[in-house]
Image (cartoon, rainbow over all chains, first blue to last red; front, side):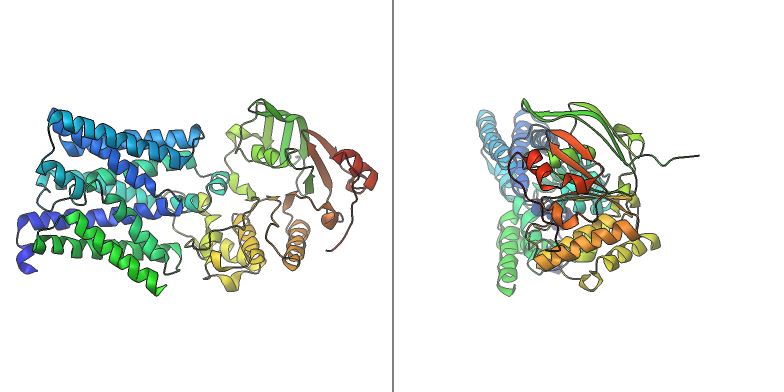
Length: 263
Length: 251
């Protein structure tokens, strides 16, 4: 364990992973309670479009992923709230549409290689110092907003209509939440990968809810589950040379099954 | 001499959805302190009228004033408590304790960095005590009976210390005893706490003795300040368009 942490790439992976674990599980609690879990999966696929464009034109894939995820999140929320379309249908369209677009762009750029594989499934070797700085800036901002508006987002998850009549600016807060989720997903692709980040957002709160506690305690447990999974997943990834995202998600699944059996 | 403004002042309100005229030429005023029933056939526009009052729908034309202020400029939403239709149908697994749900009623008052103040705590405890749910404080909302959930939802609406409570047919999935207790609570709130009540109901017979005013909504609006005259069988039959019979009862 000590030896593992002596490597700079593992230090970076742990800093990024722990940051992502807290952000993903905290924001994931709100989308799970709103029956909007597929949003994380959809935005993860959209972020792959950003990655592929970045690889094609030689710009930072991470920044391009942030930009495309944000744009898609706003469009999805607009279509859901203002155009009265079914949320699950919108998400299904964006999910498959963005994956198709990403595959076409990747084919055009000839980027079917190890670099793409690390974006799909995560890699502990891929986190650079620049990535950490980007994650630090956007992660801190997202964390601050989630903590500041924690109670309002909780109220909206419980009863959006009554939250609106109580005077909360629900539309603005909904756009803020999907923006935060878009940013967190884009930041997570280095560690967990675009195809697996949805699990880090959804499984911790779903497992925590099984223990039948109030929201505050459920959220803390959800964060703890995500942190434990990231620590174990990254360690397994290091010792057995496995993709970090897959190791983390398998660990999450194990905890979920235990929660299901216990409750 | 200064007069308190009306709670609701609605003038010539029209609401159309996908070319269907849901409400037309609706005008009424509700002064403070009233216990007002909104009745009418299904699809007549009762819930739409309430949603318009609460700003959840935009009127096609007409004006709405809340506490003397045009709705578009109104910001003191804590003065209005709302218990929506089917509010008791909560997801059984939702991770929310009774206290957390009641506390939601204070969130809009707490502001950005707002931690729970002594006043918040007092209002939450008071609302829970009034609704008789203090002993359920740490129970999950999804684990309660329909009647208990209903009282929690009213406690949430009351925790902001509103001047008017809007209740939309809240008795779905609630047993008879809890319904009776619910009507007693509304009467108590109106008579001893001076909370105005706007109550959408199909069962006007059970609150006939309490109400001051009836709004009959069936696209258009008929207001009666003499509810006892309005709920006469012949009048109700005329309004509903088929033979109707009002039974004043305590269940």
